[in-house]
Image 1 (cartoon, one colour):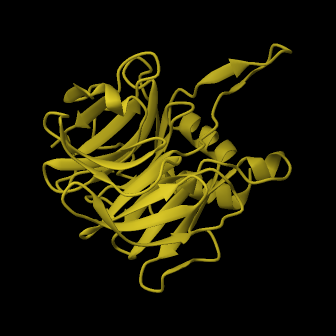
Image 2 (cartoon, rainbow, N blue to C red):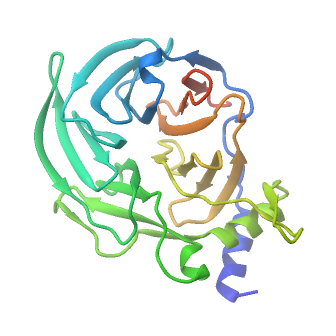
Length: 287
């Protein structure tokens, strides 16, 4: 076992915050979203009672009542496109298209005022996750695509940051994660890891961790990374140390796409409908 990995593992397992503050198996409320949000993507907080989301392929920002799931407003901001990421920074909103185009906007009446656009270029393609690191004043970008190269390269996941003060992409990832190490740490923490059987009959981990959304817990600074394709929620601390890995219920979240926190720490996750209806789930913080 590599010394660095061993040190990280010991720190993770000794971490007193190793359990998340939510019962992720039991949403405190589950709202069925309107049919027009069947392919809902992204999620961000607006205020203590409101969240915002996008509809994939439609550059329109939807406001939702976080206590009912009802649409309370719509704000168009651009031509159709594969819109995947959304986050709020103060009074402004940033929306990420999968090819790296970012819209910076302010909400008006019935439409959004686009203040400017810029493009982020990363080694990985298919950019989906977008969050706001208020403490460091930067956007966090979590690519769904993986790095090119051999198996070791393809097993690495990286988070990137766009500096809001300097208005530029930082040249190096702000966090690097190993899928293999995460699987080991999850199992050592007693967490069941999903598996699949290979054509040769071997049972191997079925963990892709290709991120569709990222959010930072305002209470403890943990980073929540959502992988829609395997319905996994990875929680790490700011330094990338493992906290937990949770398999979301497929009957509730057929394709979880967005995650955010309200200012009081309430957690919300949305899911595309696929063969059912799109939903917004609310998780109250355990006191």
